[in-house]
Amino acid sequence: GYYQQLKLQIDSKATKKEIVIWLAVLTTLMFILCMPLTDNSSIFSTNYTLSLLLPVMLWGAMRYGYKFISIIWAVVLITSIHYYQRYMPWYSGYDTQLAITSSSYLVFSFIVNYMSVLATRQRVVSGRARRLAYLDPVVHLPNLRALNRALQNAPWSTICFLHVPGLELLGKNYGVMLRIQYKQKLSHWITPMLASNECVYQMSGHDLVLRLNTESHQQRIEALDKHIKQFRFIWDGLPLQPPVGVSYCCVRSPVSHLYLLLGELSTSSDLSLTTNAPEDLQRRGAMHLQRDLKGRIAMMNRLQQALEHDHFFLMAQPIFGVRGDVYHEILLRLRDDNGDVINPDNFLPVAHEFGLSSAIDLWVIENTLRFMAASREYMPAHRFAINLSPTSVCRARFPAEVKQLLTQYQVEPWQLVFEVTESNSLTNAEQAQLTLGQLQQFGCQIAIDDFGTGYASYARLKNVDADILKIDGSFIRNIVSNSLDYQIVASICHLARMKNMQVVAEYVESEEIRSVVLSLGIDYLQGYLIGEPQLLSEIQ
Image 1: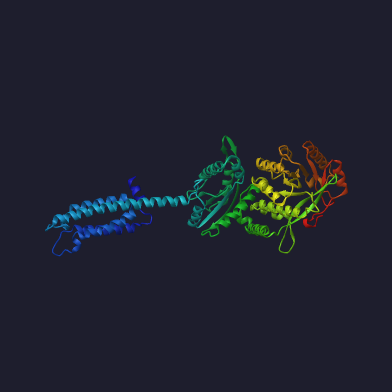
Image 2: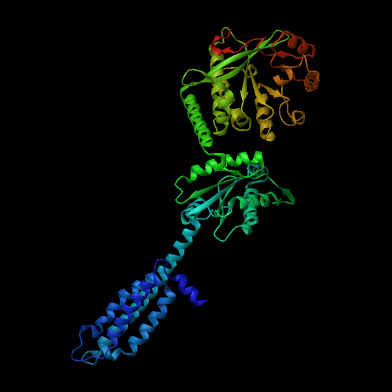
């Protein structure tokens, strides 16, 4: 109603005491102005007091909204005009004074109403801006700033973190609108189970956060987890149910380490996807998460330093062909502060996590080509195999960068073999095929590495045009004693021959293994029996 509109227009910082004092001052001025003149009357009993009304009304116009001020000013105007003879007695020049006073009323009315409208609109715009500052503009859910404010206003809170990693792949396939609508629908699904002062908050990427009261929080989170598992998201008639990881912890206001805490909850929610149950950060313990995070960040810094200052070094392992030809696989290595070699399994996942994989691949390619250019006189036609990360394979500009490096170092494309791991590089199959196809058009060869260990290996291989197939060492290691491994390798060799692909057997470490794989028609052998890795600069 009208009364509610009056209340909404009043400045939120204006107190009842302030309004009462303002009304008292205004009433006092009106009382003095309308008192009958006597011989003892002062200057305040004349129209001089009228000029004092302007600053008082301007204060009210700035604070209390134009609806309230328009009512007050109308009462003031009617009262002062009705009793004008009390503060404007007749005397010589009365007409001129009356005209001046009337003009003052007109000017005062314009100023008071204009300022009240202007101040009210400014408060409305400012209030809307403040509300939008606490709302995500895309998903239309409260953001982290709103979460921080809610945590400060509650002495104790439970933070519940929802992690939906499947949204990343779904977003790539169906567009960003799927991610937006999924979060909105999931938020609406959860809201009926929340109290009035609890809320769902938007996180960047594919995460959401809940702020809950601490009463019976464990039972409530278990109920929320069951409720979330029942959620079905319908997209173009297709029901989708990506798994949701749930982690939580209790915090006390003020929360000065919110962003670090959310990072730990995100890591813990990944564990929840494995255990299929909500993970309590306090029970699980955050110290190991902090140590793991610090370790990954330290490794990231080490990798960046290695890229900037060429601290990596390259090794090469020979791959011998049954027809007498040979080429080498390039192996990347890194040393720690003590000079010990760091296992690639320890730093390559960190490189992938922090987006350094493609830069490292280009470093390996450039340094390999530099060596090939420098050793052209005594190794004029030697070939090298270089492993590529999934990031490089799925990057559209990668073939052009390779071509530029080949031109720069004047190396023939047929001297390079690019190895891709079939379990990872084919995740984005369309872009991977485009990248590998362009590299083959240049004249480079493509090898599928560690074949047999990835998901749906045969199905993926059917749609991939590669030149070389490298059988994973886990099948070669026991091929002499394990008949199942023997049959698997035999079937892989048969498939490769149907696709006109050459086959490389990894992990050839005994004469017995070499004899068996040669009997199966394998073209190339790699392993410690054939040759151990050595520094690239030392190969002849």
